[in-house]
Length: 367
Image (cartoon, rainbow, N blue to C red; front, side, top):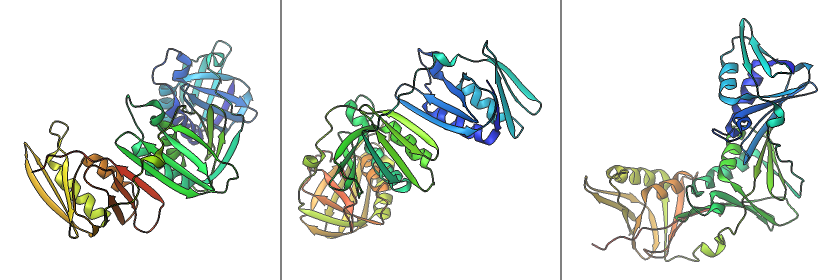
């Protein structure tokens, strides 16, 4: 294999596909990046058996071939080269020269035959979405994806396509995030994508415009975005019946500015740390949200003006869960809808049904 390509193209490709490279694996090739010439293009891939990121860049190819190079080392080398072009040459014994300007590295590559095959997807369904819309939907729901030892199926987000709408749902046992948008699609179907995959999709979209194509297979999905293909396994299992989890109606509705409420919660949470934990005590009555917290460090009182309609309530919250929902609302004002101190609070936009967040309360002792 022998090729020359622009340094900027190679650095960008290697940096992006490295996100899917396994940090430590029993298969050494998975700790590397696959380079494969295809005509006058260079195919670049990273894969960890769960997610793969691939792309192609222009190259001057004088000898076809393939090799696997250690991801971290190769990434460091190409980023630090001084020339505008980088030459890579690999012989039959996998001895590889990487050169640019006066700089030259000689290393031993791994055989591409040892690299596991990246899954191909037979398109059972295809979906096309605006890039910024998909990114916004992901970013507004990803915070509620479960982590750690949670139910595996909840470590991803549900895509529920039905009745001309796409609904994206994440849940972790303490909160739920839902975002819904109209979409042109003729069939109803659903699938669950790992949270890590969706994070990579959002990152690759960046500030780009255009469309993302989703190609759905039986066990895998491919996102095609900005010249990259992200292939991921799908999660299997019974996702939470989110419609049944959303409380119907409310005994109290509160309209409040997001920034003032976030500021108030952040001030009250200054008395809370990883070592010193305590819920926030929130009282809503007569157009005022009052927030109190008491820990071994001291106590705090704060309040925010709002517009209330319904019965007053006193309820406890984990401040982090409440802040996550408010910060991801993307609104100047939201509505809080409550059904008493032990029912989840619904956070919805003031003037639409675009998203819905649920935050479970924390039981507090009556004073």
